Amino acid sequence: QQQVKQSPQSLIVQKGGISIINCAYENTAFDYFPWYQQFPGKGPALLIAIRPDVSEKKEGRFTISFNKSAKQFSLHIMDSQPGDSATYFCAASFFGNEKLTFGTGTRLTIIP
Amino acid sequence: DGGITQSPKYLFRKEGQNVTLSCEQNLNHDAMYWYRQDPGQGLRLIYYSQIVNDFQKGDIAEGYSVSREKKESFPLTVTSAQKNPTAFYLCASSIFQGDTEAFFGQGTRLTVV
Image (cartoon, rainbow over all chains, first blue to last red; front, side):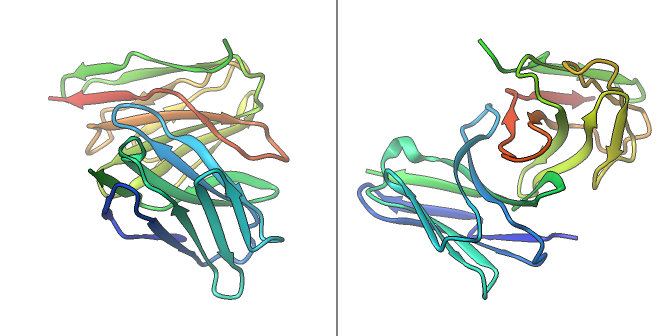
């Protein structure tokens, strides 16, 4: 039972462009939505996270947009760079049950 | 340096053998998790533990076992009952309540031949 759906599965973006990855969730009890970045052969690392009391959070070139009514959230990477090439996972959890439910991942490739 | 250490990085086993993957953390985190990662399927939760001497099954616990005798350690045993054990295994830890950021180890790639 997949509670967090992620798309696209893979994405190719030109250097300097905007990368957009989308996620949708089903469980309205979720109240914490992080994005993780994973490089080949490494464990994922937290990139940015949002709680549903705000609609957007920005950290440098990375922005999360959150739409509570649509139960969707997305990651935007501005001015994408080759070093951003990695697999990105969205996730969700809720207070009192801190285990994260992950999306299936998006392999992002930034080309020159 | 605080963090999570998984060992070994690569592991090869013959079919039918049990194998134990090590996970140690020095972050003083209460909660620890084991995930399995397969191409196109994301991270699926195998087991998690929120306190010492207690653990809960995740979404794909069949064929796996764990123990949590110490706060710092959460080993995972892949038993011969696991039908398709070849995968990348990730251990993580987090503070039990509040900020739920999970810190991951570098993973163990298990290949069963």
